[in-house]
Image 1 (tube, rainbow, N blue to C red):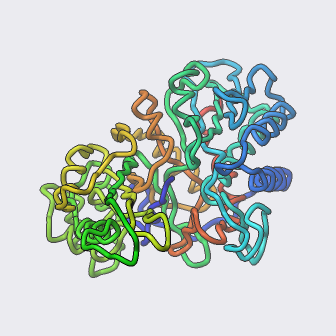
Image 2 (cartoon, rainbow, N blue to C red; image 1 turned 135 degrees about the horizontal axis):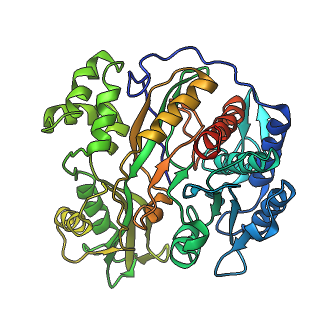
Length: 472
């Protein structure tokens, strides 16, 4: 459910002072083909709400066993026969440190063939891009992780800590359970780790040619929180209109909700982001972003940044927006019910009850009901690890050249909302770089650059070798 925040400028310096032209990485052809094969199978797998992820999880399990991971260390588990999770453990030869958990989800948002220029469930390479549902969110990342773990196993890389791979369900789809949450609660020993690398978080900025310019490491995310706003009415025959119409009442309330703006606030991660963004941002925003990197908050700078870019606005405040609408039951009848869903993305420390109270005040109509659809999960930020930041920076330099690496707060949501509160420090780290305007997650003709996919897998392999191998 994430909406990646793509860095829109070449960030100045959080780790590396100068960005240089990308280097041509050495991606072994065998593993490039392997990664494409895995992605092809994942894209074709029917893992929307109407599908079943268990067959593709079993297929991945077979690939990992073929790469040399013992069958006992590759499990497909879940509370139901359908839509199970894959958990595989690559064991250290001489363990001296706690494991690293690699995390991605297998399920995807539905896509209709008539909405796309091609079959969304067939991996299609065209003009240097790989098209297919999930290529960005996040089957592309899952396929990279499968490739990386298989390569570590087949090349017999000597590890001093276990590497655990968890590919889950229920992050995007309306299933009876969420796989990451279930693993944390019911199978904690399978996934217990020192920290989590979640490829569904973090992002990179690229120029128009797809050349990487900056990397981010996600340490926090906003919280998903939806409420239903509903108007009811006795209704009647449509030939006898009355003033108290449920659809009109709902429409008027939504107009008032649209005007709600929550106060701007920053946290240590967003301040670090804004401070690092300022030096090479557009001249008109440079001073404002620098101000947002400091305390106390400059309200005027926050207002200008929010107007300039919806991404900055989302980083600065809780947001609520109407996303679904329904009403009436017959063409020739007055509506007895009209309902809207308002989806909020809460700052990590936002009080959900206060948000509902603010919306209720804006609605200003006691005949309408405002009902939370689920509790907002806690989502405290993860304290950044300098060793991880350094490893990301050095590995990125090996693959692409020197890039700045900065902390970021995800404006959408990931399965990190389940792992962080469970005491598993979670960091969004991805090898994907998406240029501005190319965020097609959940949308038509979702795609990634083919070179980005191949190089991203190489980056993740080298990063895991650096973080987990006995001799990096």
